[in-house]
Image (cartoon, rainbow, N blue to C red; front, side):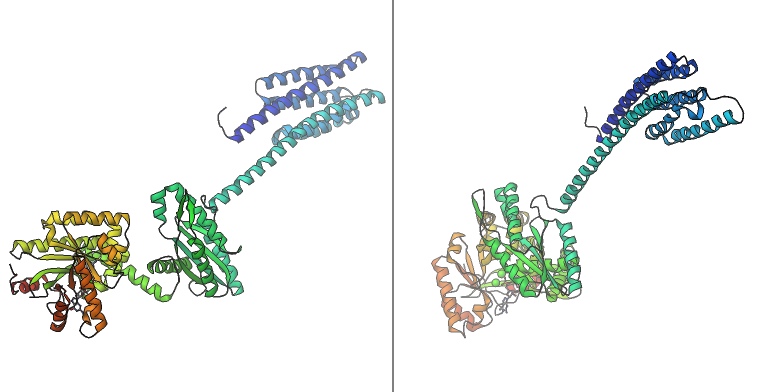
Length: 632
Ligand code: C2E
Ligand code: CA
Ligand code: CA
C-alpha cells in the first residue's frame, strides 16, 4: 500500500464498514419478513403475505446493489422497500391499529442514521401523509375497512419481532457511530500532540534546545511588559563567543556543535529559573535577566558567565577555552523594546570585543555616538577608495651620520572633498575596524611600489620605500600574495621595499601569520618593527621572525635629550638591536641636538621634521635632488 492520505484510508474503511452493516440489516429484515410470511401463510392471510414477499425480494435487490458497490443506493432501496411493504401491510390489515405501525419510528431512526437529509425528510413526510390518507380512506371516503383485530398474543408476537429487529439494526448502526467518534477523538488527540511538537520545534533551537531567536524575542517582550507594569528593570546580555570559528575549523563541525551545546548548558546554569537564555544564531546567545534592581545585578551575572565559560571544555580529548564578549543593555534606560535593547547590547558587545575580548561592557549613549560615527566613516571610506581620494606622502629616512637620503616612508592621506587633507589618525582606526584597511592597504602598497619604481626609472636610485601594514591585513588579507603581486606588477626589486609592522602583529603569531611572514621574507622584502618600545619589546619574537630593523618610537626619541631615563631606554634598544644585527631607525627627530645624541648612542638611521616632514611626490623629488650624494 502506498503512503496515501490517512484521511483517504479512513474513508475507505468507513465505506467497507457501511457496506457490511447494510448486508447485516438487510439479512435481518429478510429473515424477519420470511418468518412473518410463514405465520400469515398458515393463517391464510394472503393479502398480508404478498407485501412481505415483495419486501423479501427487495432485500435481495439491496444485497445485489450493495455487492456491486452501490451502498448508498442500496440504503435508499432498503429503507424505502421496508417502508412501502409496511404501508401495504397496514393498508390491507388493521390500519391505524396494525402492529406494523411500530416499524415507523424504527424506520425513522434508521433513516436518520443512514439516509441523506433530503431522503430522510421525504421519509418523514411520507409517513405522515400515509397516516392522513389511511385515516381519510377509512373514515371519510370509505375506500377500505380495517381487518378484524388480531388476538393480543398475535400482537405480542408481531410487536416483539419488530422491536427485536429494529433494536438490533439501530444498535448496529449506533455502535458504528460510536466507533467512528472514538476514532475521530483519537485523531484529534494525535493532531494535538503533533501541533504541540511543531510549535516546540518552531520556537526552539534544534542544536541546543534553547528558545530560538523568535521565541527569545517573544519572551523578552513579555518580560519587558511585566517589568514595565511593576516598575522593575530587565537586563539584556548579548553574548558572542570569541574564536568559535577556530573550533569549527580545527576540530570540525561535529565538535563545534558539541561545543555549542556545552556552552548553552553553562549559560543556562549561570542564571536563575525566571531568566531567559536564547540562541540568537551561530555563536551568539541572548540572556534576558528579569527583575534586575540595578546595573550591579547585571554585572554580577555577566562576570559569572565569563568565569563559567573560562573553565576548560573538553571535546574529543581536546581541552578548549571558550572566551566570550558580552554587551549589556538595561530596560528601561537603554531601550524600551526588544529591538532597541538588542541593538544597544550588540553595540556594547562590539566594544567588549574591541577592548580585547573576554570582557563585558555596558551600553552607553557615547558608545552609540561612536558606533554611528564608525558606521558613517566606514561607508565614506568605501566610496573614497572607489573615487580615488587617497594620496601618499613620503617622509625621507636619512643616514644620521651624514644626512644622506636612504629612503622614504609612504604615509597615506585622505584628500577629503569637503574636509581637506586628512591625516591617517583620523581614518586608519575606522578602516581597520570595518576591514576596509585590507583594500586600502593593498592600494597603498601598489601605489608606493609604483612610485618608487618610477623614481628609479627617472634616475633616483638606491632608495628604499617603507610601507605600513596593519595587523588586520595579516588577519584578513592574503598579505604575502598582495606583496608579491605589487612587486611583480610594478617591477620594483624586492630589496627596494620594506614593510613596517607593529609589535602586536608578531604577538598574534597564528599559523597563517607565520606562513605569510615567511613567504614575504622569502621574496627578499625586509621587515621593520614599527613604534618599537611601546609594545611588548619581546626579544624572542624578534629572533624568531628574523626581522631586519627596529624603528624606535617617537615618544622615546622626543625626550631623549631631556630625560635620562628615556636616554637609557633608547641606548638599551640600540645595543640590543646591534647584538641581534638589526638596523635601528629613530622616528620623530625634531632638532639637531637629538640627532647628535642618537648618533652618539649608536643609532644608524633617522626620520623626523628636523630632516623633512612627509612630502608630496613633487616635494619629495625636489628634496631628493638637493641631497648630499650618497657615499660610494
Ligand atoms: P607611523 O608609522 O609611526 O608614522 C610616522 C608618523 O610620525 C607620521 O604621522 C609622521 O608624519 C609623524 N612624524 C614623522 N616625523 C615626526 C616628527 O619629527 N615629529 C612629529 N611630531 N611627528 C613626526 P602620520 O603620517 O600622521 O601617520 C600616523 C600613523 O598612521 C603612522 O604612524 C602609521 O601608523 C599610520 N599610517 C600612515 N599611513 C599608513 C598606511 O598606509 N597604512 C597603515 N596601516 N597605517 C598608516
Ligand atoms: Ca610607520
Ligand atoms: Ca612609527
